Image: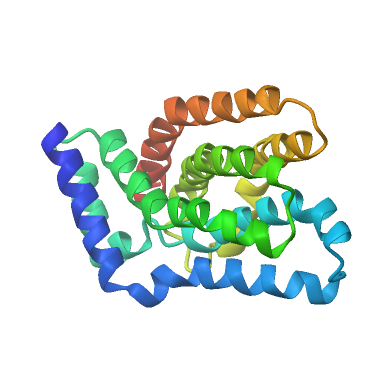
Length: 223
């Protein structure tokens, strides 16, 4: 089982490295929007500091949503998804490897980039560690939740809009508590409560999402 997990993870990471243009899209989107926010709202550091936690988290959510649509699409088009479903390896383990690869090339870079973006938006120093921790855990939850929508819409020719409609309501708790943890730290309160909720949401997603994706893929392929 561990060998199959490692093989799928390595394969998806290698494919991501070969498609560097697609790999850079979420990061470029993240940077462009956050560069434009001061021009559209106000260059005042005080004004930017008030909206920085929410803006950074919204952009992280949208960047994840932008890339999650392709999680199973290439495998569906070349027929390898069918082979994964009928292989002796547990499908939920294959799904987990693919989600981990997606997070490593999307969520982790966004998290590592977030302190620079915090500087650009004049985020107070107290908000940096809660922002990094909440994004580190929260983007993993976003990838897991988004994988369910990607599995449900994999066989649809234009499933991007439906995918957004399916997963956006499920993303809301992660967004609210992730941004809330940063805002509480900026306001001088302990961010532990919202951070624990984000951690609980990630743990629940890790427990349920691989099995939900497995069922959704089987329905999408044979339904």
